[in-house]
Amino acid sequence: MKKEKLVKKYDNHVNMYEKHRCNPTLAQWRKQLIENNVQGKVLEVGVGVGANFPHYDQENVHITAVDFSSEMLKSAKQTAEHYQLNANFIQEDVEKLHFERDSFECIVSTLSLCSYPNPIDVLNHFNDWCKEGGTILLMEHGLSSNSFLSVTQKVIDPVFRRISGCHCDRDILKLIEMSNLQINKVEGYWLDIISLVWAKPNKVN
Ligand SMILES: C[S@@+](CC[C@H](N)C(=O)[O-])C[C@H]1O[C@@H](n2cnc3c(N)ncnc32)[C@H](O)[C@@H]1O
Figure 1 (cartoon, protein in one colour):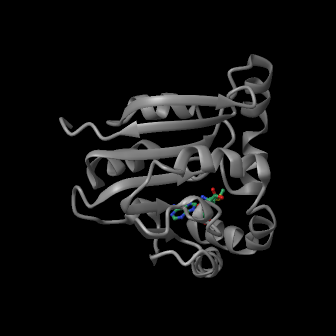
Figure 2 (figure 1 turned 60 degrees about the horizontal axis):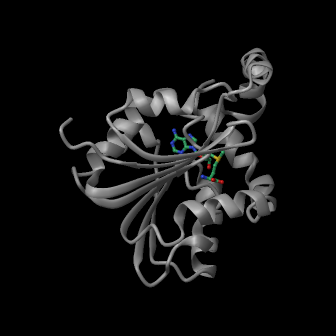
C-alpha cells in the first residue's frame, strides 16, 4: 500500500482509536509496561491518539511523540493536555526520523511495529537513539504461538492489511531477536498474539 494511502487510512480511523483509547485490557498491559519504568526523555513512535499517556509520570518525563497521521497527532495533543504531560509532537514517517545517537532514556512503541515496511531497521534505530542503560518498551501484536491461529493469520494477512493498514502475521520476537536490541523480559498474552517486551540497547553494535 502506498504511504499516502496508509496515512489517509489512519487519518480516517482516528474516531475508532479514540473510542478504544481506554480499552481496559489494553490499558492494563500499557500500565504494566510503562508505569514506574519510564523517566527522562522519552520517544514514543506511532503514538496514535495517546493511549499510553495516562501511564506516564507527568512529573518526570518529557515525551517526543511521533506519528505520520496529522489526525492522530491532533488527538494525541489533546490527550497530552488532558494529562498535563510535557510533550512535543513530530509529524513524520518513523522510518525517516533522524535523532542524535543516545538522545533518549526510553523509547516506547505500542501496536505500531506491525505497520512499518522495515521493522528491523526501525528497531535498530531505537538501539542507536536510546542511551546506554536506557529502556525500550514494546507492546506489539503478531503471530500466535498456536499453529492453527498462526496459519489463519498468514492466510488473512493480505485482507487484514488492506482493511487495517497493518500486518497480523509478523513474528515480533523473531524481529526483535534479529535486531541489535537485547531482550530483558517478555510476556505473551492471547496465545502470544500480544507480546510485552522490556528491552535495552546493545551498544556494541
Ligand atoms: C495501530 S496504531 C497504534 C497507536 C498507538 N501506539 C496505540 O498503542 O494505540 C499505529 C499508529 O502508528 C502510526 N504509524 C504507522 N506507520 C507509521 C510510520 N511509518 N510513521 C509514523 N507513524 C506511523 C499510525 O498513524 C497509527 O497512529
